Image (cartoon, rainbow, N blue to C red):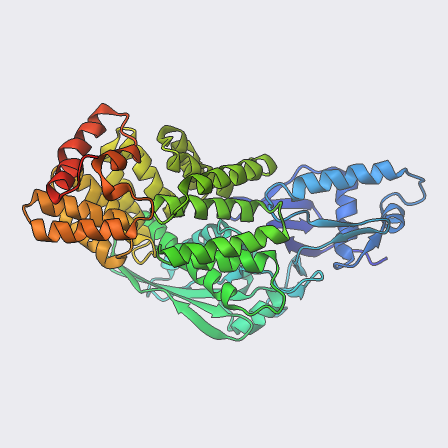
Length: 535
């Protein structure tokens, strides 16, 4: 059978295989050696050499143990070792497909290139192991330095490196390693050609210009299959106080916006026969719309379809649990107890199958929060943020948990961080609300109204925004406006909690005396003035 050339490099699923051995890409985008046995490495080379074709057990034994009679158990042991190494971060099944009674097939998409390409050689040639270009696959090209000072090249390179790392944290993404992308530096190569050579669907390119105390960054996303421009980042034009802090903020904001854009672009692709990933991507696109009853119906339906096709999908389990709990938290569920119970069961299955999955831990945080177990939810959200510093949708829930556990002073800074990183986020109304709620609780009524009105303007279908406005307007003596908002909160809320103070308190958690006292003297006092009865 065909063997691998000694100076070839293969890149796949965050790994690199070359003549020296196997390497894994770390959080910085650097490749670090992987501890792997010689026999297992030989088996991997045989599988990769097959280019996605089926390899029989006899072919593997002949290549790895030439002239030696070995038992099936030896091959099974090596396969188990490979799967343990290659599949540990995957929630999508094994890289190595077993074909019962026939052999094995290595199924990830790979890119191949020479170890030391000359200046005029092709940077990479595509190998697609029986699959099309991976969904959410992207190459971040080296950002151009447009500054007069050539020494500023390092800053453009730093933004490229950080973006590569940040995008690799997007769930389901396939991001070309920066070492491969940098082979295109200074070359005028069309995005369509790069997409073909690296087997990616998208290419991100951009530029950095630094002049005096100003830095300007531009970025644009290109569909590598059609050469169409899909998205351009708003121009980041900032004064320099802390250059590297600014770099962090710029790359984080681009990564967050790209996450939404990539998922939307993929979900829009037509599929004659949708599979699990199609439904998950469509569900993620639906989830990214502002919260409304219809949005929840659509997203839940799509994740249910994904789960019906693959009941063991950790991603489908986690995302469905997240959607069910969010529907309850946004007071748009007519059956909150049933939705919470279903979500809890799904999270249990997901964590049992993938105990290190950050998505499953985030889903666990949502379940604990909707059960008002705020102290237990905090480490789950913090685990998600540790995995991905750009997980802005964990910052808001974390802020709420901090509030209900007594750390009210930590609430607004966490929410402000989310707004700074994602100023056009579809969930920004909830973030505005959280800031308004804290101002209300601390008797800064005028400031509370400013933020709550911003929340209402961003999304008028959130019942709790209207109830807080009803309280704030009443505290300020605006009875008519207060009555309108209270009526609207009752109309929108499906669980009836705004019918009385008693029912509203029963749906909250006020174990911390300090927090309970704040609610009593502000929110509940205002709602009583607005006309909400005790019982």
